[in-house]
Amino acid sequence: MSADELKSHQNRRFRELLRWVLSRNDYYRKRFSASGLTQPDDFSSIEQLQKLPTLSKEDFRQTYPLGMCCVDKEEIREMHMSSGSTGSPVVMPYNEADIEQWAECMARCYVMAGAVPGNPVQITPSFGLFNGGFGMYHGARKAGLFVIPTGSGNTERQVRLAKDFSTKILCGVVSYTIRILEVMRAIEVELPCLKIGIFGAESFSEGMRKRIESELGIESFDIYGMTETGGVGTLGMDCPFHNGIHVWEDHYLVEILDPVTEKPVPDGEQGEVVVTSLTRQTLPVIRFRTGDLSKIVSREKCDCGRTHLRIAPIVGRTDDMLIVKGVNFFPKQVEHALLEIPGVLPHYQIVIEESEGVRDVRINVEADETVTGYMVEKHLKERLGFSPKGDVFKPGELPRQEGKAQRVFYTTREQLNSTK
Ligand code: DLL
Image: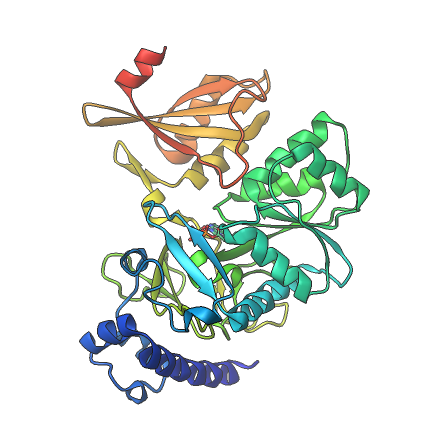
């Protein structure tokens, strides 16, 4: 679609969306009337989007379980849920049309990565309340792929199935893929048919991406989406030119806002990703504050031919930023710096130790015998501008996780001393 066609398409869907929520949901009606929107026809174009209030996880919490739902309960066919970073449940219900919309977005991701009908796809996120497994399934069905729905866990069986059924596409959370690699080595199985990795659900550094690609011999893609927008793949993915995540703009509007003032930041500047879903029926979001930080990479047509805008890989969440001794950093930056050290393995923990209000950082990382704690400390000081303590562990010594990895741990020095 040309930029003009896309714009008029978005304007039409935006008007339909406002009419839809105002005619069907009290919560939206109340919020919008406070901003002066009572007649949807007052809003004719997406230029006026910024007059509407933003929505946050708090709105989901207040309306739990179905207070923002815009269809009759009998119409709901599926739900997913995330506990959110604050622990308050976020529920996303779907009617038949929403499942179809999800499948469409996710199928586009598979096709963009190079999948063709009949390709075996191994889906490693769990099939349950987490949206990862089912979303990848709905999309794979629509794209005509051969689904191997392993879910997470039982990694050895996972690897053997990938070998026996010639898995071509592996989908999942990055940290679990690292685990798969480790088990492949341990049981000496190679996967020559594996060509494509579709990874997301957590931020990962360029260093991690390169390592996975070279060790598995695949091309990897960064897939984006979340419970509140309807799940994995709804927001988009990078194309084979790997120059930013294409947002499915015929289905979603993306704004990048200053997280404090909620004003838009110029293209190229980092801010919070704020999303409006144009085509979801059961629980559409309007100006949802995702908490994720990114920036617009380009609104120009991509070399792949797509006109949908591109955003940078997610740096982290606004609440992931760590501040230690006056230096701000994201876990992803630590990961990137660590993986630059030869001999370091992609298993690490960032431990924030606090004593009498003073914070220190300890990095626990697995590495081969050539790496010392001093080398880790020195390299991180050069890269990040502060001096953490570095503790090197033998391969396999740090705990492994099967879902999204927890990288940051908090402890007090007193707790630490008492366990020594
Ligand atoms: O994590 C959906 C998903 C599943 C995406 C599998 C990709 C693969 P939630 O559990 O609701 O849904 O978590 C959403 O995860 O706000 C981001 O902070 C983070 N996230 C998702 N995709 C990426 C990504 C799924 N590609 C939250 N890069 C989001 C970085 C991501 N962070």
